[in-house]
Image (cartoon, rainbow, N blue to C red; front, top):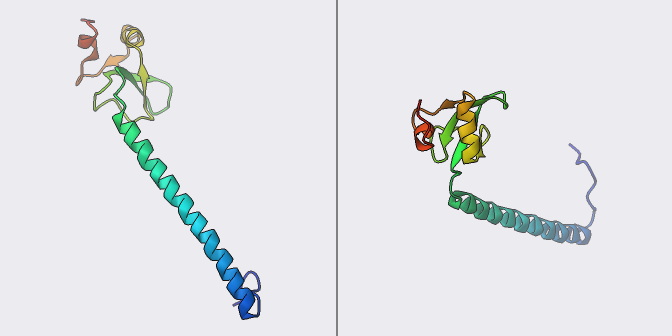
Length: 114
């Protein structure tokens, strides 16, 4: 089986190639460590952010509002399927017929009683 490229035939050039490849590998590993550290920092920052005051859960199609939630509600959907909204937008969505979550009761929190 032949390699995709030919290696130098002599020991001295192979040693040079080895040194070069080890230097490149060290740079790659350092970059990986840096990116892993950045990811840990980013994750810590994300966990420290307070939840939004209100969210609207979006349907699978990505467009239709399904339910309004108090921001910290565990039923509010994933980050992909929910978005933060203002108090006024939450009130408007409920008035427009978007369902209120039966767990966190945003309609009660907003003072909208049926």
